Length: 443
Image 1 (cartoon, rainbow, N blue to C red):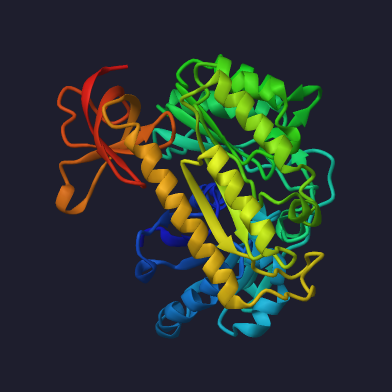
Image 2: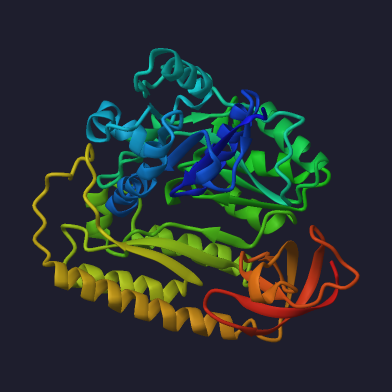
């Protein structure tokens, strides 16, 4: 009889994607092979996101769709991990009778023990306690674990101390702790040895990193010296910690890509103050101007919340004004979603739902217009692209990768090259979401 199989369904941010890889690695040591399909799995985990109500609701819907598998296989184990697990804990077990385990964000390493306890006791197990510690505890990468990717994530810190009024992250990810420098560099060196060309540094407020006197800018300089790594990205920075040394590192270090995902949330200073964001639009715009002066080719994406409870029509117009000044290449905009445990969860919301949706539509319409204009300027340009994958389906002979500005680029012919190569591509067409080009020469 072969190994048991695990299937994990991941919701939310890159941190969750990274945590999923860690859980796959941990359970591999426990005799669980990866299953592409939940139908063949012995253990199914939903690694969850609770930053908005929508992703949280998807968890319950997904569990409902999977329930028949449990009914037909009594040995199958169901589990919820990630932020919803941390947020709800025992409540999930009470709500979902067929759930076997709930593992919080700070307890990934305990997953094998939890599974063992469930099997031995026949009862559901919940593990969501935060561990009070000064030093960063992390599931380190195994030297023999092959992720088979040319780009990968590296967690450099976890948790958040910001306590923005609307955000549940500090309550489900715990307090901010930076990972030791040596551990970060060692992991990146191991990635380079197995063929990874591009890394993305992860942290809730990634640029507030600080460990034994090494700040984020210094860390970028150290990573830039690692042989084999060709590209460095990071997400998501906070304007409070976007110092000149960080901005200078982005412009001066050849391996750091000319793209930042830079959350704005609102262009109104009154709303930003109520959100407890610790910056105003003037600071945000001055940082953008500083970087664009150094890097005219810089591409910027952002997050925006529409319909925050104190947002007036004038506040919303301030957001549109900032969007026009910055000209974001793309933005991820959402209606405000009240989250449990946050300071404004019970705050009265005077904005009619129709008004919120109208504002969101107007914002998306403006972004579409800006994105099209930004994309049109790239037609005919030469973009450096890391070829990452061959597409399935009707375009099976088509390949794709990412430009330095983090644009998806499709290429029909890579004759003479292979996956993992970095090439120069002439852009011949494009849409808001992707570009298409042809290779003109290697890097």
